[in-house]
Length: 305
Image 1 (tube, rainbow, N blue to C red):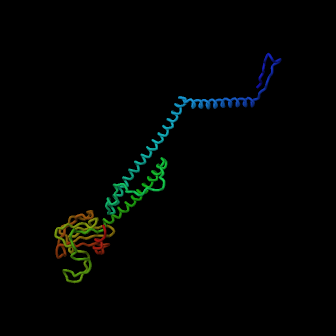
Image 2 (cartoon, rainbow, N blue to C red):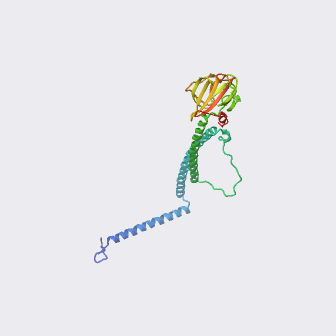
Image 3 (tube, one colour):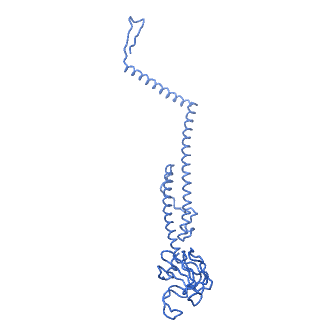
């Protein structure tokens, strides 16, 4: 780029040639000068405003502080809403966990009040000599997340335990452990004895319960009725199949209250005590058979459950 200077004081015009790099350098220098002046002007303006307690500066600072406080409050509200939602979720899980614990205690044969599910756990102890530390919002969030994972883990384990206990409870319901009559006592036990009809030594394959005629006979366990009719030796008799080749037999009944194919539960009324068949008096003859072989009923009746 050529620059020509013309003046009355000059005998002739003068020309200068400026290259593009020189123009760029001059522009950069000019820009730096402008920026420096702006910074200096801003600095001295702030100094002046601070020294003279400028209302404009005061309002500007208040506005900036208000914006910062609003951002902090907004963040705090969002954090509290998130934690409140997480807390509500944990409370719901605790309610389900308490209900699950109540069911488990009943299945296990324990009293729910022994665990005091409806009370907060009692805690205490002397004041610690170690300096206490406050929890930040981040620490609190981490603790809530950890507690949530622990609750989920405990719930899964308790549900597995519930299914196992339920299965065991169901199996116990199918084992003849409940006495078939209330208040009766053995008039003849399982094993060798003198036969009351022949006077010979004979093996007695069950136990006899002395009871008044018409006394309720209850199913010793749940199962399906596979026989309910008159038998020449046993008189009016009922057989209940409990599964796994286990059968209970109730003989000499005066009246049958169930029929073949009926499903009965433990403790269900199935017949009444009588004196039918090969019997010398009113009583219940009770047998337990495994794969058709007579077992000692007393062993089952002494079992828990």
